[in-house]
Length: 452
Image (cartoon, rainbow, N blue to C red):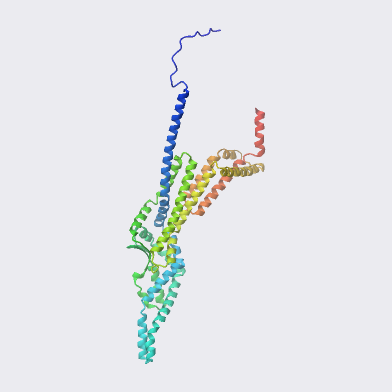
């Protein structure tokens, strides 16, 4: 047996880095650590807040820019936008009334009554009849107006008119460029402080129809009368400059908003809260945009004199031109609501826990029933059950990517994407639960006990 070591001189104390911290030092360390964590979280909150505010401010402009760019760059989209105007009753009536007035104004009704008076005088008609013949001017003009209006209305309300309208807009798609950017020359034009609709193709068709019906004066309708004023404002130049800018940024501004919002969610201390905040904020901005469109509609209607364009026709024109913009805004709003709701369902709230628990029980019971009937998924189901979080993320990302790549998603497309994503998640959950049965679940602890 070895002799015990004799006590010798003690060596030097261990270096401070190797010895445990004392109570006072540990308190200082914890205080510094909390301070650093607090500073780090404040920086993340500040960065997230700035990015979210930027995404909120840019989101309405991104929607408007995308709409403006689609109207300028996509001929089919533009034709689809203006096509309903050809069949709108108020617009048809405005066009018919305008053309009828132009035709009748070119007919010298007083000259006709004077010629009738001279003819009656030469025929030795009684002086009372000759003197009263000028009273026929009013009824004659009314009869002429009715007859001409019937012919014009037949043309304007015909399917051929709608076809002419669409063909003319397709051939002259530069109309929207002229309106929004002040460049080009076609049916919709900017003249001075007004935006006018050139209906020259329709006028030519009506003129020919009237001439065929015996109204030779219709051939003298002046070209200057082939326009209808849609909008008049002294801020047209400023509006065109703004639309040119929106057209320029229309291709990348939506992507920028998505990237900024994604970075804000990534930088947030809580990704789920960041996602919900981004969705709620963008949804609120879409509501603001919808309210702005309502206000712009009122401003537009107030700017068009009733003698230039009837209020109902002006309202139809505005609603037709902005209907896709309004639809896109609603689509983004619905997508934002769905995103915020999804973020809540993944949270710790009582309602969210209840929904998750109920869905898990339902899919689990269905999967186990499949397994008991012999439709067991085996290793594949076990993999799906083990990697459920990963597969859920893939499905959600795929649905979001599909909506992003869709050319013009609507609210119905968003609802369809949501339904497909939920259905896929339910099927995956059932397949995962079908990898085992209830008996296997109870037997597994017994097997472990016996092997131990």
